[in-house]
Length: 174
Image (cartoon, rainbow, N blue to C red; front, side, top):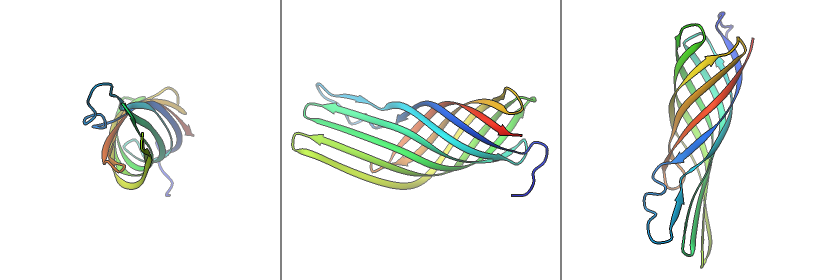
């Protein structure tokens, strides 16, 4: 990469939050049926910011699992993603910024269905789009905190959208 200006930096980060598998519980109804489409999510990332307005991140996120249980049946869907996103950043003062993300992900998903008749599993890998928005506050020149929302479109064999809301820490190499 070309040498950046005074606002350029490489950084490492980590996030933790909650994911929701949209529409996972939509068709799950009936007496004695429970469904949980929310789970703890966590991720790690490496980024490079060319200037105050543009950056690029590569990361890994564990989206957790969604589970549905009913009389004689349990369905569990679990996913994790590797992602590459471009970032557009709008500084608001010296320490605060708003950003948008847009890029692609590679997902690995497993769905396990356990019934009285046995266990069936389905594994899927897919590549699709991800996008999101967030805010970041620079505590010091090296450390920042962020809050963000991000969507992963059409994950897994059932092509469900997964939303992740997370808080994160960023450490810059300066």
